[in-house]
Amino acid sequence: MDSGSALWWAVAGSGIYHGINPGMGWPLAVSAALMNGRRRSLFVALGMLATGHLIAMLAILLPFSFMTVLVQYERELRIGAGLLVVAMGVYLLITRRHPKILARIHPARLVLWSFLAAMAHGAGLMLVPVYLGMCAIDDAGHLAAQSLMRGNIINAFSVAIAHTLAMIVAGGILAIVVYLWLGVRFVSKSWFNLDILWALSLIAVGLTGVYTSI
Image (cartoon, rainbow, N blue to C red):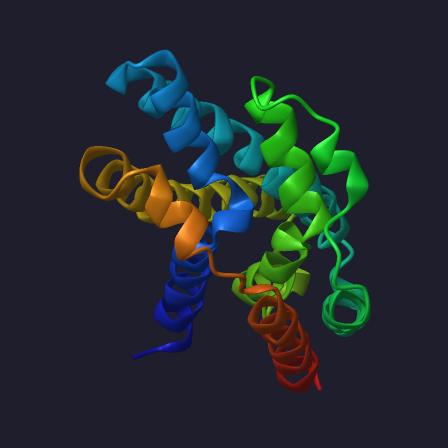
């Protein structure tokens, strides 16, 4: 597998991980369907969760798409981004509690909830070293800055969309299975928390980004 394919697999893999993690909101979709008594409510909720997650990914990736125009600082950007992701992972290991602000948002506002959950968990940051790896250019001195920026912005949208699709498909499958067959008791009895694994994943991705840059 070449490096480009590996990076895209990393984008999809992190999306699947987010989808499986109940902390990213799929139980809220199940709850919405059960409360409203309509299957349609589940899919509406999943769409809202996906929208918030996508916005959070773009909020992180788009600024980096502009910065990578400064090709002469590409290595420094990648190292800095990797260290930032490592710092976020360490912070989440130390601070194990979910941000209180998430508990104060009404479940009906799922777009806002999903956006803040993704930002609080550093979901977008995890994609930054992967994204910058995709934008690495060996012979960038011969490219116009405008075309480079355009390509980076397209990459940012592509990464965010691919990641969000993987996330919502994985989470959606779990939500449908729980709603149709397992029921809400399954969620309460088998709730699992992947926060430690997520924090360690952030650290691993950040260190990998720094290593590949050096």
